[in-house]
Image 1 (cartoon, rainbow, N blue to C red):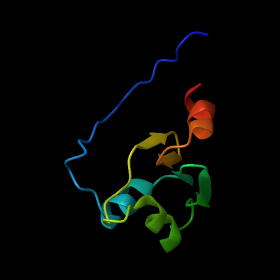
Image 2: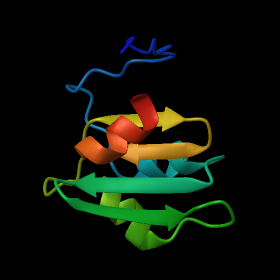
Image 3: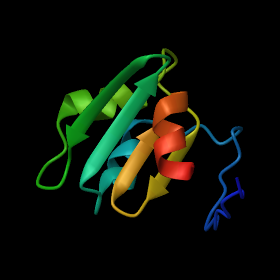
Image 4: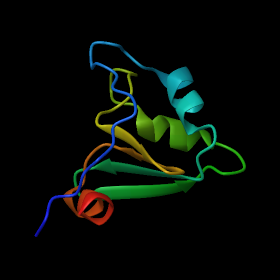
Length: 90
């Protein structure tokens, strides 16, 4: 199987602590948020409005955004789940 090439438009170092306001800004223009934590995968529709539960799902216990975070088109992925990443990245 041939590896896919990923075009990274912006990298943000983990030392930059992104919080709820940053998460809300990131979700602007998105239609779907997929928040992952291990086997738990939760999808939110954020096209018309961003529910508070969606913002909360992007944050870890310290109140900072969870990593990794990626935008693929109008979908935002937050956290990691192997099945979801395989679906998006092959």
